[in-house]
Length: 186
Image (cartoon, rainbow, N blue to C red; front, top):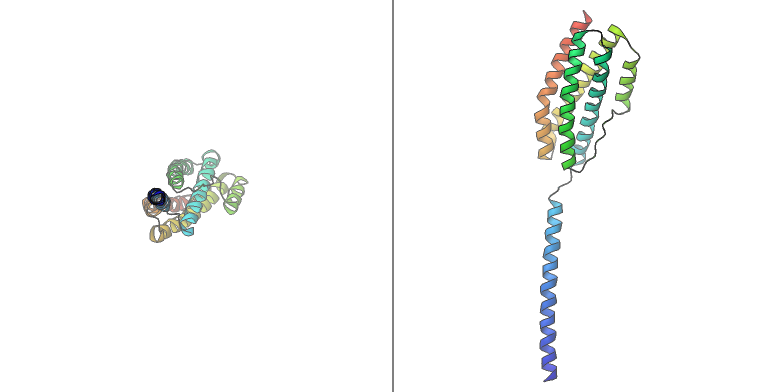
């Protein structure tokens, strides 16, 4: 009799443990699948975000300088537009990166920083020509290429949507930079 009672209690305890273990496993499984839904970005998507932030930081820094250094109102107006547009774009980019747990720099990279330092040594029309060439045209060609590539090949839908949304603005910037470059050369 004692053995039967013990056996029943042991059996019930095992059932309770099994139910608790199953509940724990299901809970852990849900936690793991929720974490897996965060889907880390591919290396290429991450590199795009980093490169886009640095390109934007370059535009912002160089355009802040151009507003004060450029003697012509045409270049100052272009720089004001670049400052406003790239500040807005970089804010959207930072918000996207935050949702993806990516920390972005708000500083140009080494090569871009060297371009800004080179610009800082120039004055007058020389400054304007170099700004229009390096920041207006060359930097925007690079940015259009970067964003076009991401709009075609980004794996993350949010990253792809950001690239697609931003690309027309960058293409417009390139067109007006090319026009500015021609006007300044005359």
